[in-house]
Image 1 (cartoon, rainbow, N blue to C red):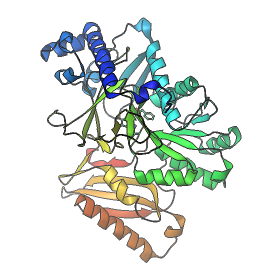
Image 2: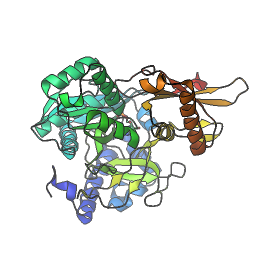
Image 3: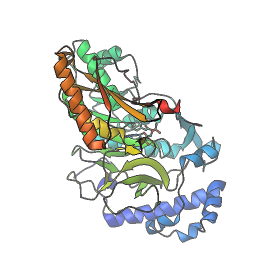
Image 4: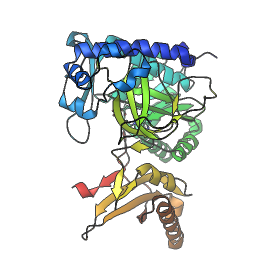
Length: 433
Ligand code: DLL
């Protein structure tokens, strides 16, 4: 089978050899160029010479977001500024920005990986990619942009916002692939409906959606509303940006681009590897980056490795759809709650729209409260009160049985929950305010 790059069907032995060579080089590079790593390796009692293959990876210490912040802005760069051609940064809701950089080779490598992602969705140089990821410091917009050009397809650099214009452009310019956050894909579908444009009026055939968690039910909705294949694209600024892992058309987990990033799944409390196939925190080591290579970076994202081989023929390992982050776990009355579990319940109920918000508060007597606001469609909303009440009850009961805690559910009018143009803000935790 022919893939965009030959590495996609690499054998296990070849991969191990390639990874080992690249890891050895990267470890040497950071040790020699980044004082932070030299110090950290010495503290851990490990030297570059100790790393002889990927089997020695576990001997290296972890890197965290805090390390990036402590070395803000350029402290972890492993290349001189004369070789850096681009900076990106993630805003971060708390604390300092996380600043990352790219050399010419890094941009070339990143673009190649995005081209790989696009071709996994069936794109070729004949396609027109409608890119609504934000352009700017965020890695989404420019990351996808350069990948489209690398593939030789056509990029429409429309960025987010002005949804009516997005639909018009899609119709007039003949966009065939959509790239945006899954929440924005839903938002745009709604605008399309309001404008009286049908999925038959546009040429879209697939989409790469990521930058935020989404569920299998949300995929089902997006695919139905648009009449397309909706694939999951994952990445984070620290490791590169979009394109660290991507789904193939089997839609059963994301292939990690192991020729550039080595994934590990660890128990976030002990730091030890979990048993094969078990869920835990995803950790990445970059093995080809020059600007800011990261060793055993703790992503805080939770997933598991899918051990079975993929039917598509690609040999890169797969990770399950990202179900949340260790730091967006809410602790409600002592119970660990992942927003994705709530989404799963909501989205399985008939008549409920994929727009919701979770509001956490602390009552006067000190007890945490969890309220879930869910939009229903027009038909249900104008239905009899008793139908609304029965849906409310159903969601409440299901959440209660999944999470084991009581919640308040409020069905709200269509269109009343704020729409996002980038990453959706679904959790409002008033307890911190
Ligand atoms: O969101 C990069 C990106 C852009 C990925 C466009 C995909 C498409 P950051 O802003 O640094 O980078 O945010 C990274 O977003 O650690 C995850 O928690 C979350 N995330 C990214 N992709 C997915 C996904 C970009 N497919 C953080 N599913 C990551 C779930 C995702 N969460």
